[in-house]
Amino acid sequence: MFGWTGTPAPAPGAAFFAWAALGGVAQICGTACLLHLFQLRSFSTGIVFSKSEVLQVAVFGAVVLGDAITILSATAILVATSGLVVLAREAGAPGVRSALASLAGRPALLGLATGACFAIAAVGFRAASLSLDLPFAVSAAATLAVSIAIQSAAMAVYLRAAEPGQLGAVMREWRRSLLPGLSGAAASACWFSAMTLESAAHVRMLGLAEVVFGYAVAIVGLGQHPTRREQLGTALLVVAILALLYDRAG
Image (cartoon, rainbow, N blue to C red; front, side):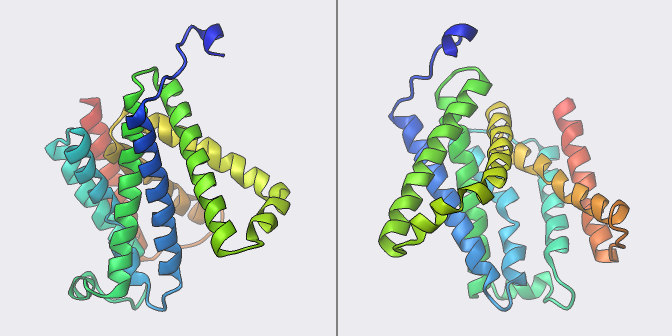
């Protein structure tokens, strides 16, 4: 394929594999923290703190990769995080002030760990892709393929050691997982391509549009009526996304 397109084949070095492995392992850890968070009886506080991913990825990207964040972009990220906090709160859940007071609690710590792991994963994947110094589509595809291979190998080893028999059960359900797997792979290809072209913080910010689309579908397609809290949170997201688009267009 590379010969037909005239694009040189990727020649990854040690840095590429290190970043890809870091991103893959961090993503697994983030997912594990999130699933554990769902099992807690009072997980709303943890969900609020997990939304700090948008802020953490901006910090990690600036420190590790030197990704520049303008004042307007930083403001948009703060506004988007506020909108996510509003949306994450459940009816009757403790307020943000109470959540901050319980920072040392298990849900809060798990939420922060979830956000940190996903932020590290995003920065790791972007660093791996940039290290190849190739056209973005080739770099993104190579990074995605290697990351998935590393994650698959790691999970296979874990299942084999910790949960005997589960690996075979997973393999037997390949037909059911085919469509979700292909959909997830396509979405990941888009994420990796975007993070090769743009800073991870900006990509994760624009990805929040899925929340807005979700509420639009709920209103138009399902006839649901959002609460005032949901309207406020969605409005903050829309403002933040428009501000970021304006900043990048300038």
